Length: 179
Image 1: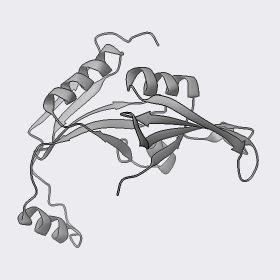
Image 2 (image 1 turned 30 degrees about the horizontal axis):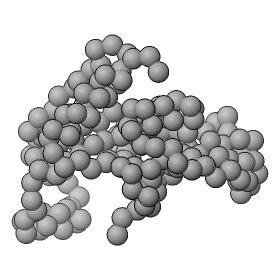
Image 3 (image 1 turned 180 degrees about the vertical axis):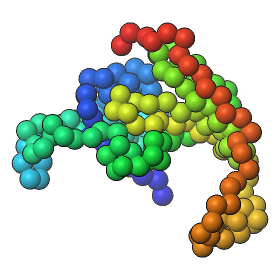
């Protein structure tokens, strides 16, 4: 079972649209406009991913809602969590696809962090709302020992770190691109 859509609030819908359509390549296909429970109204924009009519990322542009001047759009900032804790990750199948996304993000003026986690390889950047966006390729397989370790960690109360990443490489944007 997959998810149908992930819905998030947008600080600046035009910047969010530029990021998700121009840079990410997702297509804006639908908007629902309606009242918000508790007052105000919103526009709910749906972006189709990979041409799949069952997979979307969606953003709310809120209007006239109580307290909106105090909204936090970065999921971690809003929850008081360390940066990067809450994030969303999109799947790629190959190292070549991952490298192409890294290059695309850098060309768009975005800083990128690459991490080889020893079982998956990831790149990360931030969207206009401050949220961490990841592309990830699974590079390993899962063993019964991996499951045993994960189950044991459910009850652990002391720090028992995983092996360090095989690679951690920042890729700063050469220059910030114009939107």
